[in-house]
Every structure is written in structure tokens, then in C-alpha cells.
Image (tube, rainbow, N blue to C red; front, side):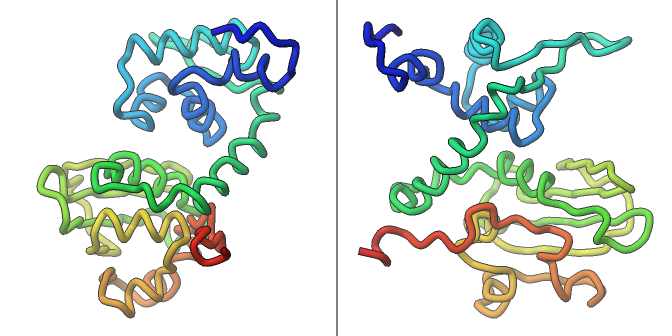
Length: 228
């Protein structure tokens, strides 16, 4: 889309204003590199649309597409101009936390996206031992309520099938509650105290979940209703 204006905001919007583009950039800046990983973070996007948007970003110099050595497929890397959008994306998220969180509906709470974000929130160096297995049980969904996260050194695998390993930490909650914890609307201790989140496991791991699963990207941002 062309706006026919010399305004830099208009010219930037010609590149960034298409549907899904900013969310693809969000995923790239959060570490998404492979096509399937980008698609997991954008579960409602069609393969055709994702490919089209990635091609457009590559043409505009925001993405570098590289063949995976000795494998099929490609990886997508943010360029310098794409990385410069990080404070823009963060500011947009902060604005959304303040002004748009009241628009959330039940269908917005995507468990697959939540687990991807929780995976990215894990700090393996703050865990104890060579391997840690966390089992999540979500009580507010019927399809895929059970998830496992296996952390081995710096490798983190997420699956919906029992990996057959001893579980170190059991977390029982709802998708809504876990999403609110990740966004910083409520902390782990408060969620446990309110019986919205149940954690079972050795105290060395369960005593401070935020130490090794430090989410809260938009913590401490009050909704507009609290500041007006």
C-alpha cells in the first residue's frame, strides 16, 4: 500500500503496516529463526501469508534469509534495521498493556503461543542439575491440556506427549492465569496465594519460580483505568 506522502511515518507504514508484519518482526526479535517456529508464534497465519510477508521484509532489507547448512529449509535473521525496531515493538506492547488489555477475549489465550513464550522465559543457568522436567496442566482447556518442558543444559524442548522422564516440577493452573503471570499482571506468589496456580516439587525449585522462569516482560504497567 502506498500513501503518496513524503512523511516518514507514512513511508514506514508502507513497509510495516500490512497485517501480520509487526507480529512477524516481534517473533524475529524474540529469537524465532526457522519457518515452523515463526508459524508457531503466529498460529492463525496461513503459510502463504507468512511466506509473502517474509519475502517482503527481505526485499526491504529487514530480514536476511539463509540456507540451513546441510539441511533443507532456511533461517531468517533480523538485520540492523529490523533490530532498531525493538524499542518500537516494546513501546507498542507497553501501550497495549495500558490501553488495550481490556479488549482481551477467551479466544485470545492461545496455549501454544503461551508455551512458546514460557520456553523463551526459562533461565537454564538458574536451574539445578543437568536436566529439569516441568509438567504443566491447564484446567481451562480440553484440547492439549498437558504440556511438558524438558530443560537440558541450554536446550529446551516443549511437547504435548509424555517424554517418559521424571518430572521435577508440576504446575497446575489455567491458560489465562499463566498468561497473566507472563505479562506481569500477577506474580507467581500472588497466583499461588489466590489458589489460581498450584506448584508441586522440591522447594529449591518451587520456592522462587521467577528466578528460573522470569517472564514479566510488561510488568508494572498499570492499565489506563488505574491511572486516569
